[in-house]
Image 1: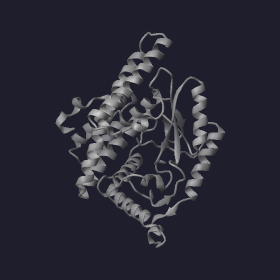
Image 2 (image 1 turned 180 degrees about the vertical axis):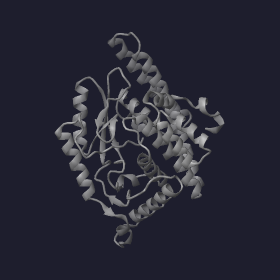
Image 3 (image 1 turned 45 degrees about the horizontal axis):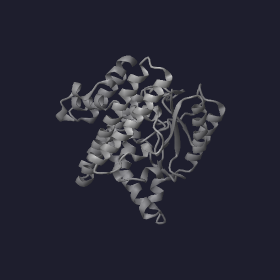
Image 4 (image 1 turned 180 degrees about the horizontal axis):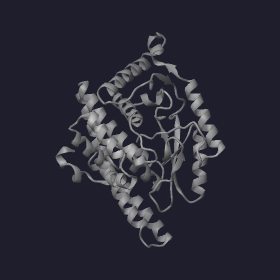
Amino acid sequence: MILRLLLVLCLAACSGPSYYLQAMSGQNKLMKSRQDIQSLLNDPATPAGLAGHLQTAEQIKEFAQDELGLPIDGSYSSYVEVEGEALVWNVVATGEFSLQPKKWCFPVAGCVPYRGFFEKQKARQSADRLSQKGMDVIVSPAAAYSSLGWFNDPLLSTMFSGSDSRLAAYLFHELAHQRLYVKSDGLFNEGYANFVEETGVRSWLEFNQRPEELQRWQQLREVSRDFSSLVGKARADLNGLYRSNETNDAMRQQKAAIFTALEHDYQQLSDEKWQGKSYYSSWFKEPLNNARLALYNTYEGSHCAFQGLWVQSGGDWQKFHTLAEQKSGLPKDERREWLKQTCPEIAPQTDL
């Protein structure tokens, strides 16, 4: 899974001075570390591998603008070498008996279901404080981020750690956030960006006639849907439990049993359908909790709603964006209900 930090330039009402200072310091360091991409491409000293990644990124950006209708402006015209596995570390927290993530509110981004730190240690310290309050917490690395157009975001070395398809996915997702963003609605924002990412990568691979990569990408999307179904079942079981009249001790026991069942079902899925391949194995490196399931739903929970808009648009990107903008203007409760719909309600299964 891919995770994001929505940065702001002013102090958030629910954040203290120390958080504000680390955000400003981290953003300032990032901006000062930028190297112009064209200068790097013109420099014979630039390593061939890096030059190849940068050239591919330029082609992806052009496709995003010309074919997908995404804004480029000055975004991703520079490059930053990141130290470590991630630029940002996001803290996600829920109550012990809840799948609703804690929200942190910012003047520009609104309320979002995570809090980002430029230093892993600070993220861990924040997570520990929340854990001591009895909350379920995770700390997750983010390979890419969006400032929603407030800065000319740079390409990060962490975005080059996978395939060209993964690089395209990062760029399409983050540029989608610049194209359409609803303040304080993470489910809509990430659902929209995830759909643009998935469908955009497929279009890009088809356009560039990369059939083997396309087959691989489609296979990974099928794997993702398998896993989403697995997570969805666990979420449904937990939601039912948390709405029950069970005592806290009884809920703790049943909660643990549901997570144990999820691990067992995952292993069975891996062994039987995925031929022993350990997709999503990183999910199980640390004990499962509500926070991990809550964050996954933020990114994957509204696919069917946007799939319906894509079918309605006839595969026309401009029409799709227009339809999405119309849905973004719905009152909050209506928009939330629209996002919850399931695929069979909006399109025949053969269209999916």
